[in-house]
Image (cartoon, rainbow over all chains, first blue to last red; front, side):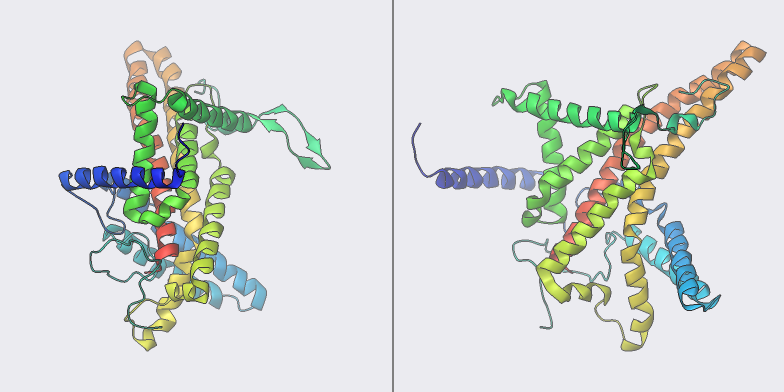
Length: 125
Length: 248
């Protein structure tokens, strides 16, 4: 066993792996997808969106009911949160089927996959 | 599956195999716990057995585990990017546990622990809390910008922000209910059709065969659903993680 720096060995291995990966990615038709475009088969997507609408409404009504109990504002909280729930459900379904993932506050990104740096702060602080 | 006179929901009953009560808390060893241990044991066996004598040219077992590894690694790499691989062990474990739970449930007379909402909700609340903490830890209060989409007029924010907040907080619900409802519905359906076999078969042989044929077809569907739901659970976890890390 040679007592060479194991980190250097790992780095070599990493480089080799990266090269192999690049070769394979170039060969694959899809290449490297962006956010949420990775492995989305249509079927998986279909299984995902089924509940989105219902749950949002149910949870919305639940929250509204809790607010009403807490603040004694029956029925207004429930009404407000019901419509909020419906809107949320629709937004979520829309996002899911337009391939945006289920991202909250999704902003269209320019096709580049997220890499390296933690987060891309584009226009402000 | 259930016998004709049985309730199709009986298959979801929890049996206390070894009753344990500690200070008023029911901590019994149940059939659910047993299946979870079997699932964890099989996963460990598969992975350890595959890497025990790792060869350059993989054998069958090694091939399977390498494919599973690469599947999840690629999923994380595609959706989160390189730094998401730090969370690979968690997502891999999650995927394997759900996959094995779903598939073991397909064995007749066994038990599907993923058909209990407390199990799936436990997993999804851990993900939800964990992802929120990762986001807050990486971005501090910037994380809250998640709820304020870019390019929305100020006037609309009063509507959009509550929607975003609500759709963030329903995540543990959608994640857990999707898995639990799919598993429970599928298994109930199988049991109901199985329950038709004897009454119809007693009437005449041929109509008795129809529900059997349907059940056979449904079992294939359920196998598909079992794999797909594990995949959906895992990919949604990676998507949530991607959001906490990149904060688009």
